Amino acid sequence: MEYTTLGPTGMEVSRLCLGCMNFGSGQPWMVDDEGQAHAVIDRALELGINFFDTANVYSRGESEAILGRALADRDRAELVVATKVYGPMFDGPNGQGLSRKHVLDQARASLDRLDTDYIDLYQIHRWDDTTPIAETLSALDHLLEEGLVRYVGASTMPAWQLMKALHEAEVNNYERFVSMQCEYNLVDRHEEANVLPLCADQDLGVIPWSPLAGGFLADKYQRGKEPEEGRAATDEFMDKRFSEEGWAVLEVVRELAAAKDATAVQVALAWLLHKDVIDAPIVGPRTVEHLEDNAGALDVSLSPEEIERLEAPVTPVWNRDIGDV
Ligand SMILES: NC(=O)c1ccc[n+]([C@@H]2O[C@H](COP(=O)([O-])OP(=O)(O)OC[C@H]3O[C@@H](n4cnc5c(N)ncnc54)[C@H](OP(=O)(O)O)[C@@H]3O)[C@@H](O)[C@H]2O)c1
Image (cartoon, rainbow, N blue to C red):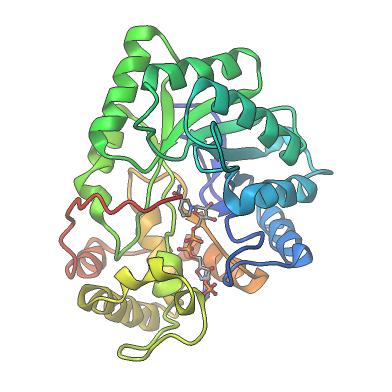
């Protein structure tokens, strides 16, 4: 495994982060079998992955609890556990958002579910229009001072909001976000026109989600054919990837994969790993086989010309279609 330091920090993370959104229930595309989830997490650890991403809202806490049980007997000091707050955890007042109240309550609840004394990277899952960012930052600072959180990060928002948060942190002397978790893959490149230049300028770590476009880039779907299996068969969020541009990108991915004796998955992830701004793509394998295929991306190199070919079909545009949590 290769390691890097996350953004401006000295904390070492594997160059692949294991996303745990798939582990839990509630959606047909999820891994409802805890044994299978543990097998993927165990194999990730064997491969040297030390970086894990989850969120309170993933299956309303199930994902955190599964991860907590899977990591229970491991050397916590080596591991980097990231989770998030913002999404709805219960109906009624104060069930979601980034108020001081909700953030402090949810941090405690995440610590319980993860069965750990601290969260390495605590991220705001989205921007909260109803809470002043200074209130959120002061709540996060409190968690940092208490030793319950080691670093704070952000996820998925317009660049002006991220810059506003960095500014508020500076003028109020709160800890800055060290990372941005945003959607980024060969077909969804809108962040090149939004947060990525800002992250490069402000020295933030970038940990992209859906690095395989939810499986579209795994070359498992056929043009003009309704998906019958895989996440796209049941997840409407996948629809946007089934575009002329998407198929054109996949065509280049297939050609390069064949030429390099690699898989489409490995070419797509290798493209992200070649970007200076990227620290660690957050992969979402459902099975050990998926994970091993993903990990093979670390051995694939791409020339500047190949990268240009992969990027040619898409013109990045920031369209604010950031999706719910
Ligand atoms: N911050 C946010 O708002 C946000 C949003 C989304 C995700 N995330 C994070 O990012 C992580 C990854 O997201 P993601 O699951 O969308 O990532 P992804 O890697 O783009 O997609 C994962 C899916 O790709 C398919 N796949 C993966 N490896 C494969 C292989 N070798 N062969 C064939 N198919 C393969 C599987 O689909 P099938 O199920 O079709 O087999 C799997 O469920 C999540 O776990 C979560 O931690 C964050």
